[in-house]
Image 1 (tube, helix red, strand yellow):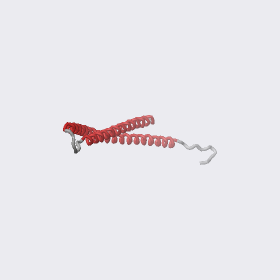
Image 2 (cartoon, one colour):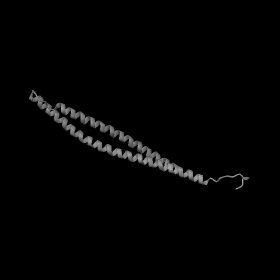
Image 3 (tube, rainbow, N blue to C red):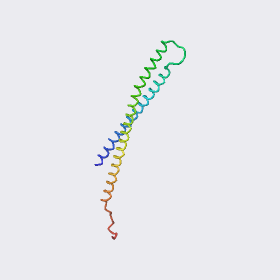
Image 4 (cartoon, one colour):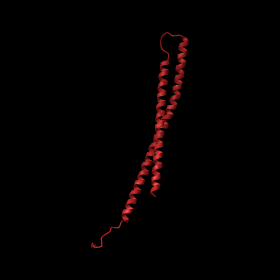
Amino acid sequence: MKKRYDKLVVVRSAASHTASAAFADSAAYLMGQETLARRLEDAAAALSPETGVGSGSELAARCELATRMQSARRITQGRLHDARSDHDNVAMARRAARRALDAATDIRRTHDRAEVARLEAKVVPVRPKDMAP
């Protein structure tokens, strides 16, 4: 019977490790998307037209590039939103896996204590023959 509880703890531990790895991956992806969005926003701001004298073609090129950077930023913003929701879902799965592991460990610990109590209940005290009751 004990082996079953040990197997349960091993399985729950593996699930917890897998969930932790997925959490780390989603955190790294989220950070990458945030960095990309920030860089695209900075690039769009740097390319936006400035006041002053400049040629029409230069102004048109800068406007075109700024518009493209802002479009890329909007796409990245959508990916960033998806990455945040995925990260939240993985965080919830990680918490659930940790709780399941804790529960399995508690079950095994309780089973071990109950087994010790059963064994102690079976023990009969031995008295030497020459001692009176």
